[in-house]
Image (cartoon, rainbow, N blue to C red):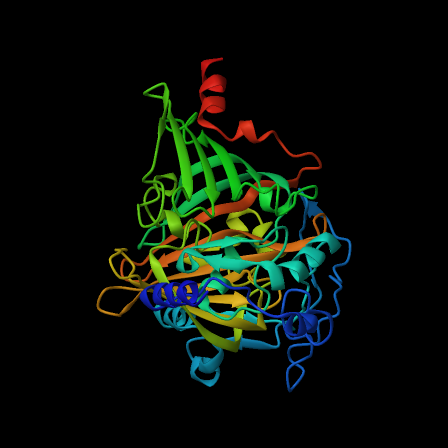
Length: 449
């Protein structure tokens, strides 16, 4: 036993991550049913009440929908604060470095409209039940780069280190199966906007199968397959991605190219490879703020703070493309910011590894573990990139989920809107697809017809 503990400690010291033991004991886990929300957030309001207490209710009135997304939440509300380049220093302690950089870079058009905070985070009861089990059963292993004993809920609702926090995001709550139609849109430095690709996508989340269990789960948590439908010269291309927690095979990828008329393995679709689906305007691991395996970085849990972050962004993600965008950034009139408590997690490239962005800072919502903002730094430590992630309410699950993200390259003055739903669709499926649908063989079979 002593030898095992020593080995685990050595690995933790080498990676800056965690040891291989249960996150919390039963006494601490019991707080998830008293002072903490089921996902580990502070149930009480903040001191001045600007963040209300969590009551476990979505409180979203019936509104028109775009697919399964209500197009408006709290539509009658007005901003309680408007932050611009002129008054940003007054609120600097609640703004990320990237948000401040955008206010300075686009002083005439970019602003932060802060609305009353609504803690809309809810989840199915089976997810709450599984999260409670995970609190005492889920462990990290491989120096924090994998997990075991987890299923069907937030793995580490009371995290002790950065690796656990980032796994909470990677294994965030999702529907079993969804279908989405989205666009990848690139904004150039002169304010022009172009379509990179338009795609139809199927997503499946084996980690959240209602009839699943720790024993049945294979370790794959995200399956996706999409087909490009525009522009014409890329129409027909397909990509299949299967993400898992196994360090040895964290991602399996297949690509179908119309010109070659064959399916090939595509192992470079990961990490800091330029994302060809969006014309290379962002890296593949920026697609969902962070997407893929976390083994390129050491993860540090900095702490929790109150920040203005995008939240309840239903109006933005369901707006028409023309209404959603402004020149060089999203339309401030459609974007809703709220004050929330967020976990700050710092990522530094791990010893012996490389990444084009050697340091990143992530802000994860305490109620959902969703990423809301991310800043990336160049090798000289200068702020280089900033990402906005848009959480929105989907009562059909029920949950708060994310889809589009906007990646800004502050040095080039460009913007990449990844998986924009504006003018697209989002549907929660009542019956999931066969997992064989998410294979290179299935893509090849469909292409040959």
